[in-house]
Image (tube, rainbow, N blue to C red):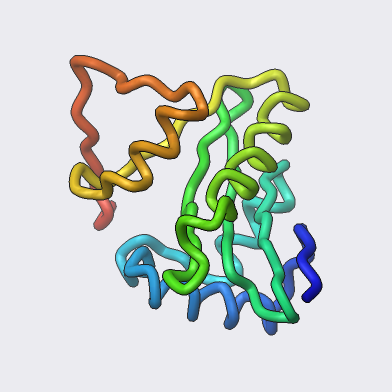
Length: 140
């Protein structure tokens, strides 16, 4: 068994990551999770971390920032590997990067994703009281 955390990103890895995001139901065409969009964020200081287990990507965490806050996106752990500390490992890697940037870390989680909420609370995240998230995807 070989486990490693990787920052490598290319089209082959992207296809594996998209497969993981589909399995974990975080893939969504409206989210603009396209290869070139990810590459663009990486060129501007973002990082996409993956846990690779026996040559298979089993977890991801994508960090972007606006030079004020870091945003943790697409925390995903393959269902077969959930509840085995991989979520904590990949989140710790993302937070380590946020710390090197000297930025606050912000993330969003679905209101019914209780397992993720538990993980985030254990890592010191607090609910941002009084705020609701709005999005406009079809800017024309």
